[in-house]
Length: 565
Image (spheres, rainbow, N blue to C red):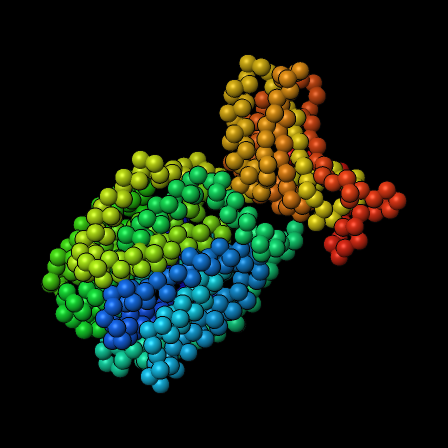
């Protein structure tokens, strides 16, 4: 059920090998159950797509099956990532599985009673997709709790292998099941394959790690994730490229049932075999990621994959031979998996752990949203111009997509250090405030030699991005016109709790950046830091000095002293 097979962001540990995580019972049980669940999803997808071809000849309705399965990931991923960072991931996973299971059961019952319609098929595929969207970030984020740190890269790689195995054999198995027993059998098989994963997650006794700070509220956590992405150029670039690749590449899976039926004149089994070829290519792509990363840059690899996949899609459009189409699909699957894996690596290596779930959710939303939009788009194009022409246009878009590198070149992650820093000393507090008190205004006064002014200002623009990524608002830098050596950095946080979260999120690279700014300070006096509670005049209590927020259920913050920016 861990959706993208494109998960491996780190190379497996040389010491333990890729199978090292399987020595840990919890991970081994969940991984094997997840493999079965992934197989169920592939089988269900084949059954749904083929059932739609039997109910309607409309190309856009057939393509909408993929949209219904993938659109929830785009719509819900950000909330799912925030939930995974905030709550017990085991409970989140169980809830997500129950949601998907309910959609699978309803689909099976209606299909068995011959009450299924194109719209109801799309509805329950959408419900299954919602469960998958909620499950993905929680599962990915929980892997680090199931294995030791030294085997985590191998565990992440195994998750990718799990989905690739399912993609390689699931469609072919689904085609055989549909050909032998109909779409109902495929739907029932998906339901049964949910059960092992439900059982192992229920039996997992997860150890909760206490947090020094209370979690953010869901809305605030989602906003924090969006702000991090907006103020992270490297992450934004990867997401743009991922979205475009998903739109162009979505044509393959969306139009595959029509390729099998109308171009190759085959059956459900032919459709399953073709999807199996695409999955085999995915396995080959996943296995070659390390080699590709050693031999070329991410941008070079993504360009090469786009060019090769564009040609492969063009071959699919023109071929009437199952063998040639299958070979083209292997190439397309290899390039697809390499591309999305490189995008996944780019996101993971560019983000710290506190926002990893939300960043991965944004990546999932980009790839799923691209496939969903592409499925809808190419279905409409196929309705108007034919399947062959739709594939030729999609292949041309994929072939030309490397032009985006002129504006959105893949970022380099060399030298990034996203490890968290040690907790800073508690800031000085001599006012009774609660976590909800705010807004908080922070002012930092530097004295900088005038001949270093330009270099200091350039560095502070990087500091600005760092502060804003981690939660600061209304950042500004000002220079004293009476004393040009004085510079004031100023920013806001909505509440005291938001400020505490903001100052605890800096990575090692960001701390080095902040220290570099401090290094410009000259003079006998240290840097001055002011943390102020901004209060409108009407909220000042003249008779009762106890603030309203101190009377709420929030635990008040007692006065303390400390340092740290």
